[in-house]
Image 1 (tube, rainbow, N blue to C red):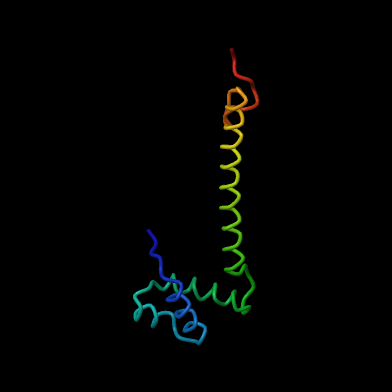
Image 2 (tube, one colour):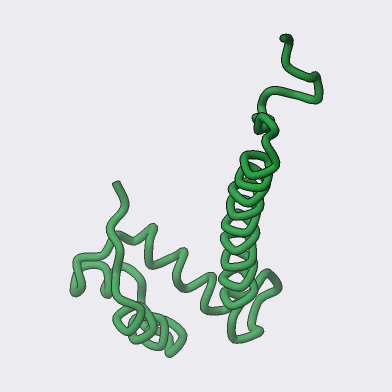
Length: 103
């Protein structure tokens, strides 16, 4: 399982990496794996336009948008089921397909 580091800690480490400090020295000093530090350095370079790629903020916004879409779809499904119940209809399961239930 991966370890989560505070954003402030990560940003301070990234500043040091961009300033030119060596990954192996920081790894020993901070007890953070070298692989993690290489990933952080690479993403920090992208965020500071030193390397091409997708910036962190773009990924965060996309993830938030996807979570919002999932929540709205769940709310819509609940609303549809409630409307079906109040109209005296049998709610249709989203996995049940388009076929009407047998009577």
